[in-house]
Every structure is written in structure tokens, then in C-alpha cells.
Length: 267
Length: 257
Image (cartoon, rainbow over all chains, first blue to last red):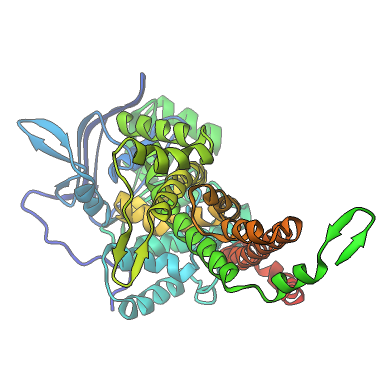
């Protein structure tokens, strides 16, 4: 039984990137949030997004699984145009059924965990396979238990979120996303809402996931994690990518002045 | 016969009718229970529709639901009852013939009663559903959508189970009002508890005794209801108990039971 490892999807011809973001624009009302962002993430790659608050990192990640609509551009995951279909060069928003199908294999972990408070840890992990994929309960129960064991919570299967610490809740949330066997995992500031002492247990789980070959896009302020785990680090500012470089290079020799001042301010 | 000063209270009659009620009172009590439960159930179901309509992205649906709520909540049930039964019949729109379904016959007045109470209740439950759904954190919907749930799936498996906990106290309140409100049905000739008691009164003239008995029965019904509600509330808030407080809650429970 393969836990948390995606079933290898066949690579399409000329389709090297698992996630491809092409010239994405997005505004909230009159306020532009993303101003033409392009980005490619290879299969198995870990990309960390950094930047000041309001730079559009979270919005970009939310656009990738279409929790936010986009105004212009294209986002492909595994070769599929997410949330839209294209007709005569124009984007037409997909219906809920199709969008939901796209999201199924894009795992997402939120800053505030967003666990379902009325369900136990095990039920939180089971609900996706049970209600979305409609797989039989006796098949998914051991899988869900194994996932919780993998994130170090085999003794908390029956606990409700309110009975767990922040770090434990976030690990359940990671297991919940993995239960859908995602092709890519999105992390939106997964440790920002945590007590300092529980940050590391979550980062450890993410590190193990990265080492297992999971494709990950991570918005975080944890620079040590970025330096040690990321393949590439991307700096965003004012809705644009200002620097994109391999992790070592990003920290040791940042090219843009904006990146240098940002790193100086947080390190 | 109890005679203190000018007070005329037939204790024998009171106790006899209270402790061994005649068949008519049992039947009236049953109608009251039946009408309350059916109207409340229909009101909850329709109320969910009204509540969702109030939250619709489509303006016409939202306004329609708001209008419905405004009209039904802003007029007295007694007036609604008389419009739906007497008024509609007088206008020749529908004359409420007895409805025969298998072995059951539903008299016209009872049909009008069920319709009115259900539609009235839907307006109130709609507001309760709307408020409860709005009270659920947006992040819950995000999380449900992120694992691939469609809007209905998220509503069914994530939002409504959490809203249920919020809805329960006002729902209990509504049900209490519903039970008491059925006493109005005597004006259109439904033989529920109070109508029955009034009938007995016109034959016996033991007004004070009989109306007290009716009040005691209503009190009994609403008391049973609030005890039931308490149990469901404890059950639905299982997840709110943190590990540390579970033992304390248990002892609290065992004291109560």
C-alpha cells in the first residue's frame, strides 16, 4: 500500500513541468494582487515562496487550486488547465463539478489548519476518500490510520481538533490532504499560526514529505526550511516575482536589491 | 368542592380530569403532539430552503426569500391561519375537502393548520439557518473545497453538521413556541388539546379547573422537550470538550441523570 505517494501519472509529450503558471493576473476589485506571474514547478520539486505580506504569495497558491478565480493567464497542473476551459483563446470558467475534480489531486494545507472540528483526527483524514472519492470505509480506515502514523499521531486517531495542539492539528491537516493522493501539495504559511515550540514538528513532517519525492509549493517565513529543503526559492513583491533561484544561490548571492533588503530585514 | 371565601374550585373534578383524563383529552393531546411535530419538521425542511435562498448569489432568489421572511414574520399567526383556511375557502380558491390517504383521513381544518404552521415556521427557521451557516468560518468551506468537495457536499458534510450545534438552542425554542402555538388552532375547529378542553368546558363550566389542566399538559410537553434538547446538545458538543474537561463533564452528566 502506497501511503501519500502519488500514483505516477504519465508524462505528456513536451510536458516537463507538473505545475505551470503562465502570466497570471488577479485583482480584488480595483486592487491588483498578481500582475503577471509565471512559474514552472517540476515533478518532485520543492519550491518555497517568500516575500513581504501583501506580495501575493497566498493568493497565487490559492489560485493554483482555484480557491480564487484568475482574471487573466493560465494555470496547468499535470497538463490540465485548472478551473477553466479554453475556447477561441478565451477562458471560460468551469462548472463546480469539474473544478472540484481538478482540486481533488491538489493538496492544500492552510495557515489556520481548517480542520473539521466536529470530526475526529481519523475522520478528518477519511472524509475526503469517503465522501469525495466514495471509496469503502473498511478500505480507507487503515490507510487513514497509516497516514496519521506517518505524521506521528498514531495515538490521536480518536481526538477531536479541540483536543490537539496547533502542531498536531496541522499534522492532521497534512494527512487529510495526503489522503487524496495529491499530485502536488500547496502549503499556505503552514507554521505561521503555531506556537514556536510546535513549529519544528510540522516542518519535520514537511521535510520528510519532500524527501519522499512530493512536489511542493510552500509559502513560508521559515528561512531555515527554505534553505535546507527547497530546490528553488522565489521572492515575490507587489504581485510580481522579483527573484527565482536555487536555494543556496538565493540566500548566498541574491541578485535583486529587493531580495537583499527583504533577507536583511528578516534574518 | 373547595370553598374558600368567594373562590369556587372543584378539587375533585380537577384531580379526576388531571389524573384520569377522559378519552377526548388524550385524543386532543395526541393531535397537539402530531401537529406540532409535523409542522416543525416541515418548517425545518422548508426553513433550510429559505435560509439557503437568503444566502444565494442570485439576487432574485435572495430578495424572494427576504420578502417571504418579512411577510410571514410580520403578521400574526392567528390572522395567517384565518386567511389560509377561512379566507382561501371563502374566495373559492380551495375548499379544503377531507383528504383520505390510506387508512387516514385528514380533515380540512387540519390541512390548513399544517400548511399555515409549516409556512410560518419556515420563515423563522430560515433566519436561524442563515445565521448559523454564516457563523461557520470561511476556512471550513475552503478546506472542504480543497479536498474536492462540491458546494452541496461541503454543505452536507462540513457546514450543516457544525451549524446543527448552533441551530439546536433556537430550534428548541421554536419547537416550544410551536407546541404552545397549536392552541390557536381551536379557532378553526381543529380538535387539539385546548379546543377539546374548551368543548368540555362548555358542557361542565369548570373553566378554571379545565384551563389549569390544559396549562399543565402544555407545561409537561415543553418540559419533556427541553430535557430532550439538553441531551442532544450534550451529544452534539462532544467535540468541544477538550481532553482536560472530559472527566469534569462526565461527572456533571452523571449528577444530572
